[in-house]
Amino acid sequence: MPPAIAGRIMIAADFAPIASNMYQCMTIACLCSFFGGIGGDSCTIQGRPLRKAFRKEYRQLSDEERNRVHAAFRALKNSGEFDHLATVHAQFSTSGGAHSGPAFLPWHREFIKRYVFFFSSV
Image 1 (cartoon, rainbow, N blue to C red):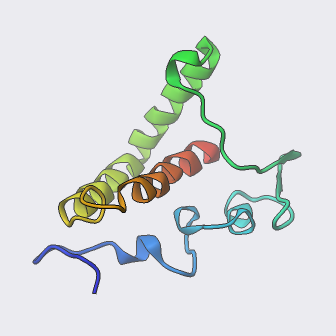
Image 2: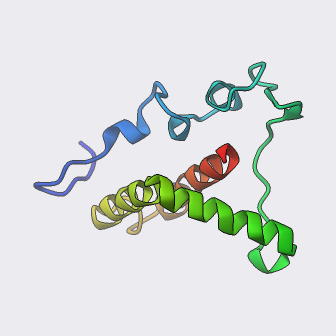
């Protein structure tokens, strides 16, 4: 059984093999349906191809890009999704899955991907 915390409900559905929301997707084809795109592995959303994320370092963003990041974080907080993601992080960090051992980097890569998906949807 995976690590858990006695008396706490774990959010197993957040990592389900059949995606019921965009955060559970592992492929571009899966994401395409949640973003309302056309196609599968070569998804097009509003005339633009959906590709792997490319992130700039915050200090290298233009003023316009920085304003968009701030607006996306406000939308994340206002939607309640920030609180959900914080709960996921707190539960996994205290159970040893996120911060103790070799899973640190891949776990956080997956976690950051969820922020990228949300930002792509606003």
